Amino acid sequence: RLRLREAGEEGESEAEEEVVASWGGPTSRQAWELLPSDDPLDLLALRAESAYNFGRAFHQLSINALAAEAYQSALEILEGCPEAQRVCRTDLKVLRHSAAFNLAAIFRAQGSMSLASEVLWRHVVF
Image (cartoon, rainbow, N blue to C red; front, side, top):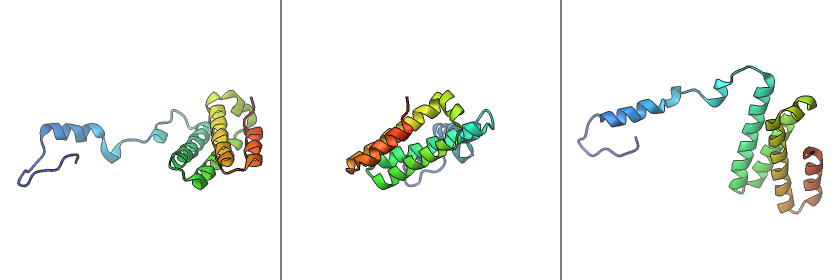
C-alpha cells in the first residue's frame, strides 16, 4: 500500500480498491508477451534491446565493467542477425550504433583509444 494505515483502521476505501484494480498487479502482461508475431528477428531485437538497456543502467550508475559487458552482449546478439535484415530495419541499426558508441565511450574514458576505435570501425558503418 502507498499509505500507512492508522491504528484501528480496518478495510480499504473505494478509491484504494480502484487504484489496486487499475494497476493489474502481477497478472498484467509484460511487453515481450505482447509481440504481434513470433518472428525470430523481433525476438532477437528484443533481446538486444534488453541487453542495451542493462548497459545504459549500469553506465548511468558508473559500473563500467558491467556496462561494457552488457553493450558487448547487445552487439553480439545483433551480429547473429543476417546483414541484409540488419540494414533494412532502422531500429536494429540505431541500437547497434548506440551500443557501439557507448561502449567506445567507456573504452575512451579508461584510456583505451585502440579498443574504442576498433569498436567504432567495426559497428558504426554509415
